[in-house]
Image (tube, rainbow, N blue to C red; front, side, top):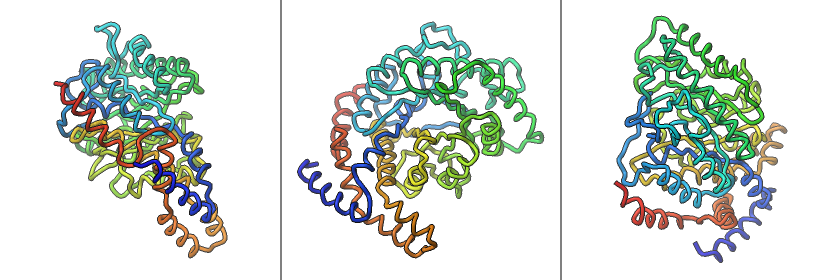
Length: 420
């Protein structure tokens, strides 16, 4: 875009928002401080580097677009390019399956920081934090779809040890990067059909999780979260870590609860749950995704639900109590474009929330003037927020408008198309 046009558009927008009682400079500053955790698994279709050839655990990635990253060097090169399109503070959300094993014989139950030192070096170069996830899928030690709730004590112990190692590694990440590492526990455990005994698996899961979290870790540096899910492929009728289970466990153990946009019934939305859950837990983790029919993890678009999620965070002053990460994987389109679209939309929705005349809307609501409240909510949609977004991107030295698209296409031709 033309810089002169961007500046002219911003001057107009600045005045329009000032008339609505909004300081655009303050809104941009507020938005910029909120970290977004970038999902590493978009770049290689969730395969990882520790030996998995296919996905399991109710996960499916569709499409075969050219240029999938197959090595650490390829994935980090793609991430660096994607980072150049995304404004604001960023972290990398890393799965344990992306270990660069210093010992080829070492398995997930014995991983150490040595297996992730290349990631630490890259994160330091990029000045980005590291969040972490144990990988309870795509591994021969899975008991079908069961891990921490397997009836096999040997299987449970393997995955308990994996969880402990992940907490230890996250502590090293926090020390190395000088910022906390959020560790999200998602287990795919469940049945395809309705079980007779729905309690026994949950008892085993609770015992396993309790053993994992019994190790000594610094909760100021390592911040564990428990993620729920409605169902997965092959576990359509029963998941051990359901919404009620995961929320109850987080509440009773003082952990974060992870709300994933695609892990609820089709008519449920997580925007309606944020302020409710935060009455009882100190903080939550959000996985921002876009479910279509089922938890298909589509690339995040700037739809009504995304905006409502960010409105809930910003309007209620929850910026310090909500950790935001993206969670999508699409192999049907250019993977860098998926990152750019999803993360830019997430940041854009945060900015639009900060640009809302929330004090006027809140005052009307408190006064019982619901007519004015609705009118202000609707008029908000006509404010020139896009002009502020383009100026914000200009200030952050990332592409404005559609400018990033040509760069992605050039990278595809020069790099991605040469990969086998």
